[in-house]
Length: 85
Image (cartoon, rainbow, N blue to C red; front, side, top):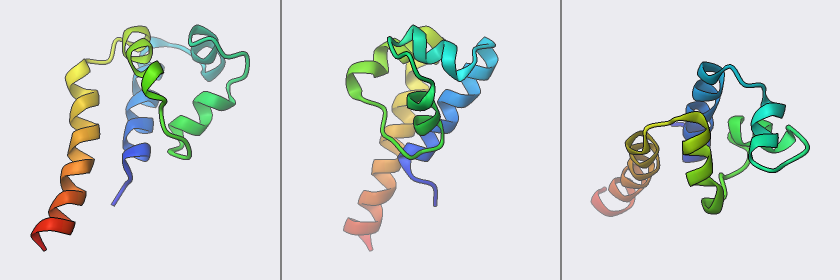
């Protein structure tokens, strides 16, 4: 089962590619000089800081509902495993 970091990273990677942006261009749009920040998020090795989520959504034109569904869906799966089973 993929983690929420991996799922949100895949979503960001998909929308970055749709927008025609490189990792460096996205990093710069978010105020970072180095693309490593974007790389780590897209690979699921790092969480998206909540303070940047709104800016990412706006920059990449990701439907807000998709982001919420990914984040809440992962939490729901964990809850079902822990609480129901």
